[in-house]
Length: 162
Image (tube, rainbow, N blue to C red):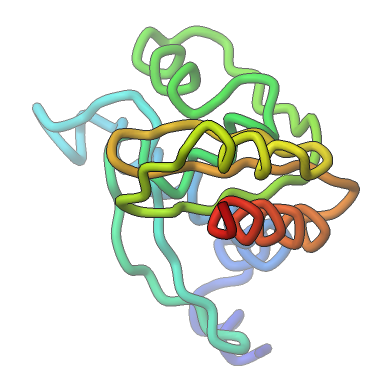
């Protein structure tokens, strides 16, 4: 690990070590908003950044310059969700990304649930169901993300039984 730090330079690599995703996100965000680098493509907004982590290695996959399905968990977990964050960022307004509660999201693509199935899923503690286009979105919160994932799984099973 020390060789990697020395190779990339401690001043640049240390923030990424301490705040891995925040450091990369800020770096890429700065890239996209700097007119000297991006020219006419420079813009403010929310970027969905996909990274793969394998041991000590972090691989960049893609950047999506809009809210994405990955960020829908913010509907349950943050004071301001990804759609509001996008609007605030593009208008250069203050952003509050305070975590309200750990959470999880589960997609059920192409499902058209009955009202009874939705009610069964919503009986799971701290769980709500939203229709998202042709998909069902199950959102759960809990004291931990792991517990929230269990709740989304329980809700999905309850919905499929109906």
